[in-house]
Amino acid sequence: MFLALFPLQLALFPGEEIPLHIFEPRYKQLIAECRDHGILFGIPALAGGNVSKVGTEVELVRILETSDTGEMDIVVRGIRVFRIDNLQTEVPHKLYSGAEVTLLENDARTDPDAKQKLLERYEEFMRLIRKGASIPNDLQDNASFVLGSRVGLSLNQRLSMLRTPKEADRQKYLLHYLERAIQAIRQRRSTGMKVGRGNGTTRHIGD
Image 1 (cartoon, rainbow, N blue to C red):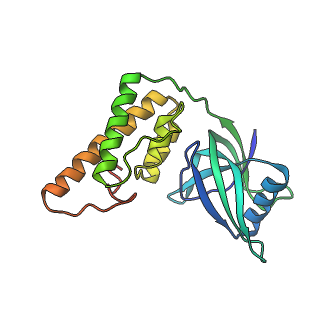
Image 2: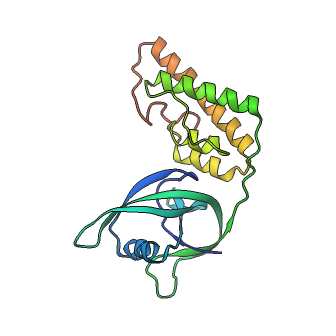
């Protein structure tokens, strides 16, 4: 299938919502088509100057504001993970690029005991960084993506998650990350180092 592309220096998870500021003519055109025709587009990550082979299919959730110059503040939501099969830097009659892509299958099966352990480590981590430790209500089938969007993963770590088709394996990856992050925070505190809040807290453990 064909997807218009909006490469960014980020990796968006399915179900995750983010705000974007749209100012380039090619992306003004793209978002106008999303608004008027309900089309979807893809966000592949820009990593090391290259477009990642994996990305996330995205829908326009809402337009917050449109300026006189046509710039827009919008909110988008990730839907499904895709793999780029054929990148098209030029699309007829369009300013933006695109690609033929394959939507990747997601195996949502997981082990209840392993998931419970992940939730416990997540709560512990959030308490350590002094953020709300409550479990999100929207876990559904892909707890790894919901929790992973909140714990300060680096771009490469997020891409590793997107490349992993099995929820059970993503949960193992995230559990390992959280256990190392918890250990690192405790070590810093034991030596008197300050631990800040927010996504930079763990300095992207294990990048």
